[in-house]
Amino acid sequence: PPPAAGGLMPALSPLVLLLVCWGLTVAVACLALAAPEAFDLVPVFMARHDLDPAAFTGLGALWHVTALSAWVVGHLAACAALPRRVATRSVPDLSRAAWLTFLANLVLLAVTLLWIGLTARQLGGLRALVILTTAEAITAREFLLQNKLFTGMRLFYAALPATGCLAAAILVAGRDRLSRRARALCRATLLMNLVALTLLPIVMSQRLLLLQFTLSAYLAACLIRRRVFALPWLMTGAALFLTVWVLRETLINPAVATQAVPVGLQKLAFYTVNDLWNGFAPISSDVPRTWGAETFHGLAVLTFTDGLVDHAILPLAPAIDAVRGGGAFPIFTAPYVDFGPFGGAIVLVGLSFGLRLLFHRAQTSFLATIAYAQFGAALLFSSHGPYLLHQNLLASLIVVAVILRLARPAVRTRAEIIPLFLPRREMARDAA
Image 1: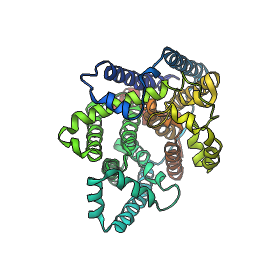
Image 2: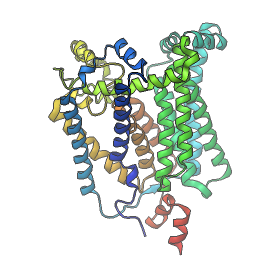
Image 3: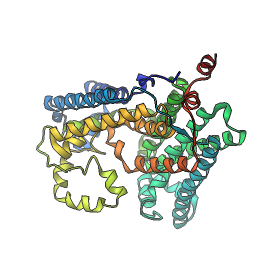
Image 4: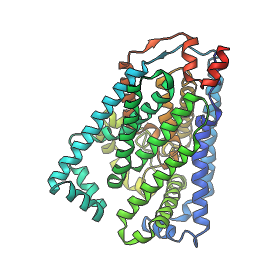
């Protein structure tokens, strides 16, 4: 029989993923602030970025409790609104989807390699770019950014986590149904993206793309298998991310290369403090309202209205920058800065409601499974910024939707679609 309306694992619900993210952020940040003898570099980094510990006030804590309560309200409202029966959905031709994913991924990689190749040519060759990267990583990054091929080009390599996630999902969903060629294409896509997203952050400091890739691929696999599995692979992904993080910090600070690991870990601890400070500082300050410029900036970029938005809030920039350290406001605070406490709470209720419905839809829709994996990964670092509505994630979902639309979905009955998302032992039990 088809699963019940709440058939997906509660452990992967948006509320749980959000709690995991914020629980880790608060725990690491509090540990770093409470043990300055062990994290002696964190106060140095805070002073360098003008982060005043006085920003951590009770009023800020009260807002975060309110924001979490708003998220819970949206979650429970969506649960109450869920349909009682599972609807029949279409499933793409997975073999064709594997081929289209491979082709789309080649285009994304080709544009990225062309960009790097042309930039290296201006410097005198790839060897010169490598030397510049090892000597002056920040200078190399700025030079690359100044030589973009066209407007919006960064969305091409930003979509690599989504195509990699799609390839992983096809492999897991297809299992014995995929041809040898289709499996090889998916594995090639995964390998190419893993290499690209491991090397690119060392130059471009785009470490969130690697994190988005590993987390979303893992979430998609778990959603399709309907259980949390292969935890050692998740630990391997975490180790890879930490390795890339340390390498990047070594290039930025070559003077501390002999202590790269402890310095890199302390810098990571500082980032959690910085993210928490970004969440607290605007609450105890009289910040002007930006009316969506922080939360919905990604939508403005995709609709080519970001220039108008940036111009409109230009007079507010000094006041906003005064309560923002490095990076962006977290998902709980960006709506507050945009709309105040009441408007911010309403936005959070809406986001929570929509994500819980998407989580339910992932039971029967392959596209919804990939989309929720992308949003779920963003929730796991939502304390770092409102990546849920970032242009990178939204553009990536457009790429995935186009691929699956071109995969000529075949309409299946409810009895045919549900086993696609069940482990083989459950399929055998249902057959019996």
